[in-house]
Amino acid sequence: MEEKKFNETSWKHHMKGGDGPDSYACNSEFQKQVLISTEDLIRQQIDEHLNIQNASFDPQNTFRIADFGCSIGPNTFYAVENIISAVKNKYKKSNQDQTPDFQVFFNDLIGNDFNALFRNLPSDRKYFVAAAPGSFYDHLFPKKSINFAHSSIALHWLSKTPKEVIRRGINKGRIHYLGGEKEVKEAYAAQYVEDFGRFLNARADELVDGGLMALQIVGFADGDAFSLSGIRMEYEILQSCLEDVAALGKITKEKVDSFNLPHYFASESELKELIEANGSFCIEKIAKMASPSGHKSDPKGFTLQTKAVLGMVFEEHFGNEVVEEVFRRFLDKVVESPEFFNDKYWEHTIYFVFLKRKGVN
Ligand SMILES: C[S@@+](CC[C@H](N)C(=O)[O-])C[C@H]1O[C@@H](n2cnc3c(N)ncnc32)[C@H](O)[C@@H]1O
Image (cartoon, rainbow, N blue to C red; front, side, top):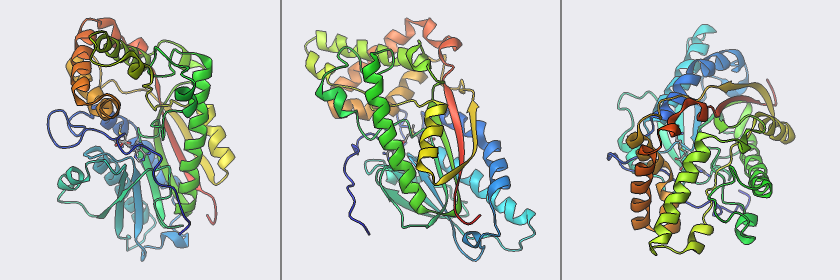
């Protein structure tokens, strides 16, 4: 194996573990709705593009699926079961009397609660399982060993906040590029080019020829990153909560100024450009999905969900006590701003991307 660097992404950018009321497992209905909304599309794409005549898909061989950024379930089980059922269907439709064995690799950062994931595995599953811990921006599997790659609502997590933003202190008074200066957005975009490029390079090596990849990516239409959106409002409320805590003297203003969320929301043209520049994949489909509304209109549920997703990044920078205080204040502020849940602010896009590894078809 070539020598690789495995330590760039903070291992703490993971979701809240366990099975408790504040866990990701209990607060990920929005992400589940995204999977439901793309379920039929994945089935259609598998039916259309999985070429079981290709030697890589000989039913004598194991069919290997990897879910990148799987978290702790239960959504990942839902996603892989849909894929397995669609693949089996394709073999049956083609009058194959045999379907392959399935093996699923669950990937997430090393800090992810893999124990909770394994505790919650469906007992009636019809697939073998293994964990593949580490950053999906690195190589995680041997060359040409994966038949199907999947990743949902994970690729907006950058490997890190762009160094430029921290080194030059160009985003003081904000915790993200949304609504900020153009040069901050550009620094984030450059980080995304590097990270998504690394993701594609690694997957291009790992997928078999003709292997498939389905991605659900949170993004914005071209140009929309500068308009007022629900995500931007959410981050601005979080920023104001941090400022309140700083005003009480519990953290310094410098600490707040040096905090920037490592998220980037790509547009369709950015995604296409990067996939085409990589050159290893055919774009079989890019579709804009409407954002599901399952996460809205309930301040308490919304706060729990936000904390389950972002709590660890806040904790890494500010410590646990500050996290509790920030999210208490966040709930109060969301309750006081009914406008926050107005549908017009929550029209950000989910991109469904379906790719096929070039090679023998
Ligand atoms: C919002 S969760 C989505 C989880 C799951 N796919 C779902 O649909 O419920 C995003 C996941 O991506 C993971 N993640 C973020 N950056 C990652 C990276 N560089 N490598 C692997 N996983 C990463 C996080 O730890 C988290 O579990």
